Length: 405
Ligand SMILES: NC(=O)c1ccc[n+]([C@@H]2O[C@H](COP(=O)([O-])OP(=O)(O)OC[C@H]3O[C@@H](n4cnc5c(N)ncnc54)[C@H](O)[C@@H]3O)[C@@H](O)[C@H]2O)c1
Ligand SMILES: [Fe+2]
Image 1 (spheres, rainbow, N blue to C red):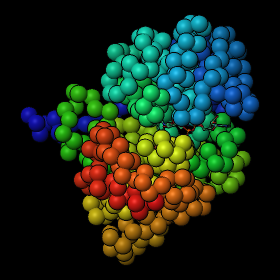
Image 2: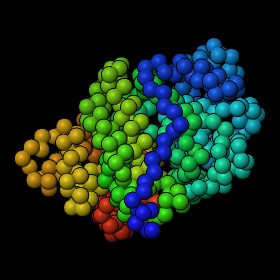
Image 3: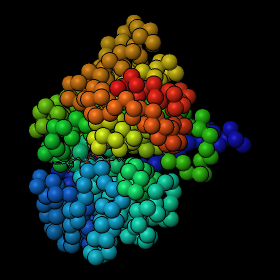
Image 4: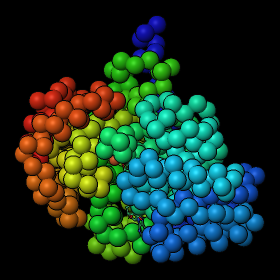
């Protein structure tokens, strides 16, 4: 029986995805189609400044959908922000919630919907599978090309009492509808474009190099957040990596380049679909303590760390990293897998440098005495560590941090 379970895999994503330039102008029609008539929009002040709240509200107005705005969200949100959004929902009494923004606002919207539907506060939901059932519908409308939160079953929220970013993971957090409109990213600042775009690359690279679904020692029925690589996630991750290689530099340096914005928005979406079923690994486990010490954005940390993590993983999967090098545009013809895999590290370092990410941990305020405690913290993220294709312990994590330092 065990082998039958091991050969079965599951793929999940948001119920529907609407992709394309101008897609956000359809949000009112999409709400009406689902018999929804009262929205709470979760946003932050930059969304109004960039004119994005207006795009959404105009469409809702035209379809006679009443809308209320909570603009108290913020980057790398904490539990207090989520609880404030849930309180805004209690006042506005919406029948659906719109998360408008980068991963931060979408994550706040997803957890606020859980609290509004089921009660309690953010602290009650930290961990895996603590959302007891479906929530009121969430429409996720990303304005960065990065996190893929519009299709994932997780929100990343800071537990302020412990100064730690923690996951709230549940299949019930997956948005009902993802509206992925590249035009909404035209105002995204270059720094955010670079950092969130590198995060999309990390999602895709980790998704296609974690252990396979047949190697994960957790039963399917336990609905682990991550269940290992399988054919659909491999296909999605490959396309995401190719798109990042082709479009990230142009998206950073030519902010109004619509083809580049479109390529990156698709890349982030595909990478989110891939990692949300397959899994993530050490670059994410290490970013959480790095982010907590340095107060730097998520994508800056995962992007900075990725080449050093890849260098550690190379011996376990040289063919996989050789393929990634070629998807990133490296010429690997006639090379051995080991040599081509080293090009993968170089290609990621070059991309990092080209888009202006810091190269080393010391550049962002990490001190040598931080490295060991960071490794001790990272090893506790079991859901990530167990997905590594090469066994990884505290010493290995400290070694990766030291080479990144
Ligand atoms: N839920 C998931 O699956 C998932 C996956 C990866 C990361 N995350 C989380 O997502 C967060 C990071 O999200 P992010 O990288 O998208 O950045 P973000 O949401 O934190 O946004 C960064 C800044 O950019 C501004 N901004 C975003 N889009 C803009 C636009 N179009 N025009 C003008 N300003 C704009 C925002 O207002 C904000 O100030 C972190 O908390 C991270 O842990 C979640
Ligand atoms: Fe990430």
